[in-house]
Length: 292
Image 1 (cartoon, helix red, strand yellow):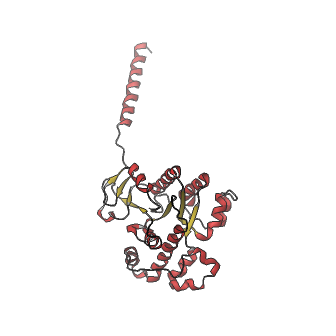
Image 2: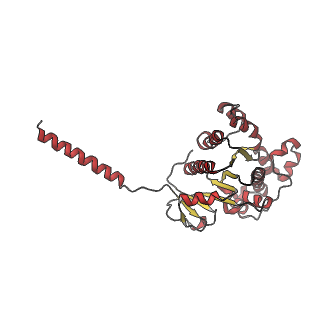
Image 3: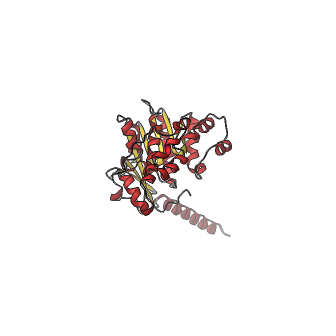
């Protein structure tokens, strides 16, 4: 093969690589998510972090199988942990598992033992372990805020009266009785509508028991100068109801910032139905695969 042929092939290769590199650099990047304020105005990641920075309590409402929400929860937790005192907490671990959680955070038991001793969600390893392990790494408290599911199940069948027989020693895992309840709150009304013939006031009371207990658990650990970042299903804090309703009744002076996760076919503009759903709305493209 002659030198001229080699030079021509070399020039062709160089041009091809350059064109490919230019194409990659100028390719359209499709956004997986966008952030909006309550009015539906797009906000930057920096402005989002500034919004939560001033809060005493941040209620991060997720969709449990939303991989973008789980990723952003970890991003926010890392950022806040680097900027000052922080407490983490989550709906996904129930209050009677707090002792095992604390032992894991202190390094007294390993992950296998923690799995055995607690009722962890099926997606714990992929979606919540990174948050717990961040707390372990940074020496942060992590609070198991949710009511034990057996009590919520009992209330769903027998109303709040089902809690009357709970042993005194176990009431530490439940918001103080009697539980305040307002069935006219929008989210509870929506529940009854969505459940149709399967919806009963007692089913909504079980939801209220979870909201009240999570709010009470958070309130026990709120301190001046320490942020509390809480992870919960978005429905538990959407439209400033649920957990926030109970928190405001307990400690009206708290500054609470809510985040909601929604899914849309496009993320350029927030659909009207989601405006006002939270102080910050995380809008995720519907084509993003779920974590399960």
